[in-house]
Length: 358
Image (cartoon, rainbow, N blue to C red; front, side, top):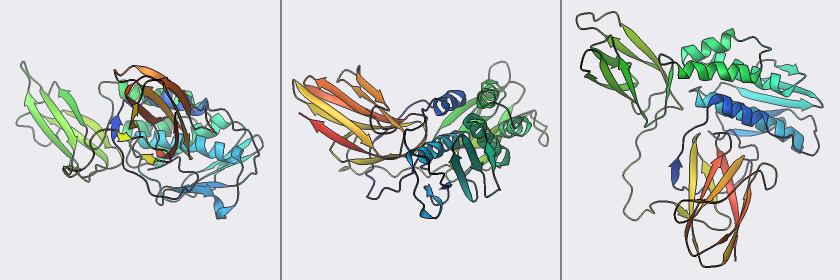
């Protein structure tokens, strides 16, 4: 998914090393979306779209759009990213967004849509509708969305979702390749539905601990069930699990000649953040007294952190470049530095880097 791919940039995407980082909470992600300043520039009132199946976005019918139109669509796509973090599947049909002066429009799955007088109200309703119509998000989350009033604030909805996940009996979102450990105090064995691999071991004093991972190719809603010995038809415990984005097959073993670790930073290099919460890493050899300037370009809202050879932060920047791109500069001593690039709101999308090193 590249939910921020608003400009259809051409060219090949270079595969680079991915450094995992912890994903933000839903409430923190919502606050970041709300905190985005409206872009300066014209609002043409163009109907914007995002096609999840084709992973394309732009103006309907190829119509031109101004910076204000694009900024509104990007904020809506930030909400879509949060929905995908919760395990939501790609919706059928297009999502549509429009801004007309101080009025804001959203439409989900080809429905007629609705106008709002405030952007937060529209963004809250977008998240609520996506979750309520999903067949893949944990049922506890879908239930929250269905019971949330249409006029509830985005902060209220996001906080309720986060609370469901902090509950020890709440739903679980499982990343492909990820492993979660669950404890069932009243069960003797734990098993999973078809999309899960569950290994369980008894605990001293009773109960069972289960290691849960996704089967390659699984997606959507799953469950882990705890049973008592001799009672095979009725579980004594159950945890709702949603496999995020579908579990991709395990990557083949890396060829001996393939590069390992961060990729060398080069002017004009193109890359993409493929999954929410990932960081793309680049290595930068520097001589004593050199100066580095790196600017991102493209449709994705990315930020950057420059790390010294010992891992300390040398510089960081978010939104210092054009639009929501970063612009970072630093004086360097001799050594190998690392540039980490991530999406500001745990989203995804392509970007390119302009590099000058004197």
